[in-house]
Length: 237
Length: 237
DNA sequence: TCAAAAGTGTTCTACTTACACCCATGC
DNA sequence: GCATGGGTGTAAGTAGAACACTTTTGA
Image 1 (cartoon, rainbow over the protein chains, first blue to last red):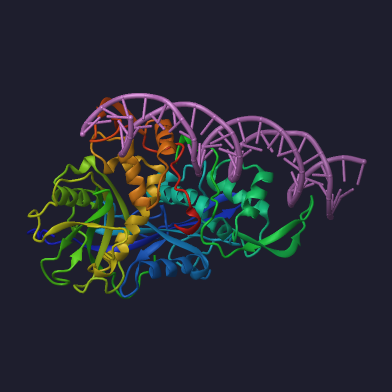
Image 2 (image 1 turned 30 degrees about the horizontal axis):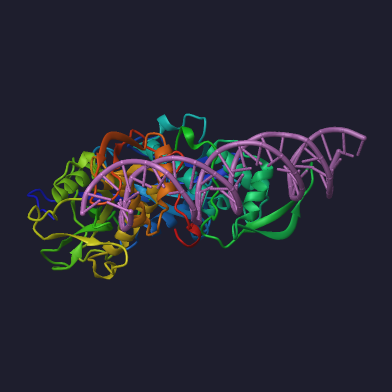
């Protein structure tokens, strides 16, 4: 390592969370309204600073619990990447380590646990992007890309659902996150064939109309083999 | 964001590079021998500290150029993730942002550009892992996983080769990184069918034995459609 | 009996795989 | 010629897409 004359920059490290869930059959992200400068009143990703000895994962888990009120260890949580561009935070040298989290549908936005208001905001179609504080629009975009890719090879789709769910619910997760229509019969076969992805609970769920559906829970698999591939990858990742 | 009584930890941010290349038909990684404490004399990933206004990517690019002597903008370079576990560096609060870089075969290890000796070390089979300084063994493992996965969907295999290469050379990249045997005839067809992956230069390369092979250069594609899938994913990542 | 959603069968196509085989060069 | 590696042909097996169809419930 070359030792420059200038000393290394001292950074504060923030952990920012892209928390996705499914509400009204749409992919939604948890945003907070900033309660102080900079960007006062603007929407932002929830987050907080790292204080050793708490490491990045622990900080992210704690923030996730504070924001959702759920047990962080039950939820999917993974690091996205680090953002440290000069000027990304007007307060100075603050690097952000972004995390992707996935939560099942929560009854109400969890407010009052933080200084500012928390809210679920639909992701696709709407122009959430431009209004976010800091570089959080780019982080949200990266989180969405990661979530879309991970649906293919990891059983995280079930993390969007509750403890028990139907195959149709699972299919609507794929449809909402990928933004495509998925053929129900083929999806049914594919998903039941992947070993360890989902297990029957033995119970049924009756809806106002139609044949009752079997209920499933998450299986033990940590990787989907064979993977669930999205249809037309011709035009973008 | 909750404001704790304790102030946020102040970190120095290091950028550490996992630089892969192909030498002797094997995947090799660039390591440096540390010239001072901590871990004096031990092998480590090359790296350096971030000094604003230079951002992470720029720091990584500069380090890559210093270590390889090549133009950084011509090489593949992407961020892996951030490591900030308490105690990972005895000197104190130092977070590391790891990058994956891919370089074509360099004639000699580039030494003398840094305080310590640089060397190429084979990755697969050998027990490089245990001997590395800091948490660099884990970082190297993550870099390898990322490289293996990216070979499937991105045209980075060509980054291991020089400006012009034969399809067999390209195939040996896949074989070395994935650690599997790839059927030559099928590989040939597949790789020539993917639009924009490789282009003929019009030249031929004669070897001591056998029919001369057509030479190719990288094409304009940024994503491989359809992807190159590794064979038996049943027992791997 | 009808609507609606779950679940099954079937066909067509596209791709992977395995491997036989031909081509072009140096010796 | 013949060994060597480049490149082509081809047939079997597998997986995805499309969609017709049957099943099971509530109203």
